[in-house]
Length: 262
Image (cartoon, rainbow, N blue to C red):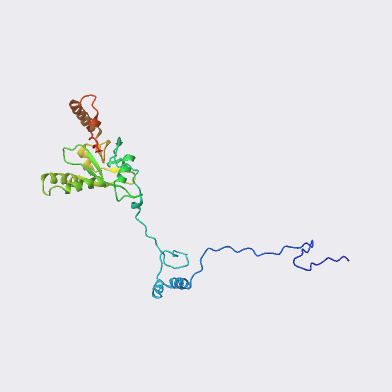
């Protein structure tokens, strides 16, 4: 009977007799965590028991490490305080002036769409506005002589109010402006569908029915009955043309830049 050789050493292959390379232990995963000091171990153990115990033991709870549900370091959730979102938003690239003219339908409830570009300016002009909120505004309707509604951003109306407060208290001029800006005005906001809801009183005042005409006016915009605006604008242009030649450039009315002294 043929006998099979039995390897006499673990370094020799039992089948071929070849010498095996000595097995080396796989390197363990390198840990970059620093070993905990005895004080840190005591503090963490006291935190897990109770924050009050930690304070008594002289290890007040640190709010910048551990915490949170399921973290294993404490049952108390830790919060990081951040600035309000509205302070983080950047509006430097958003236009602060209304521009353009539009015509929109007005429904039976007085709801009318606001041009998208106008809404962006209303948002930028409301210091309290953040994403998801509705921008606020103020509609100034004035007395019977005013044939349009003028819409102010919050910043624009506050600027006017600040200027009024600098006037002589009790003067006829101040009382007139206070009545116009504070009394004959309607604070409101853009609804969830980007529309403006005009109360019946305001619609009746300017004769607004099926359509509304929007026209920009710098840091405000006006809402007219289309037919009224056409008539008023035609009369204005006729008067303007009588006072200035046909080739007159309106830009020449702008104040010149101050000359720099060299």
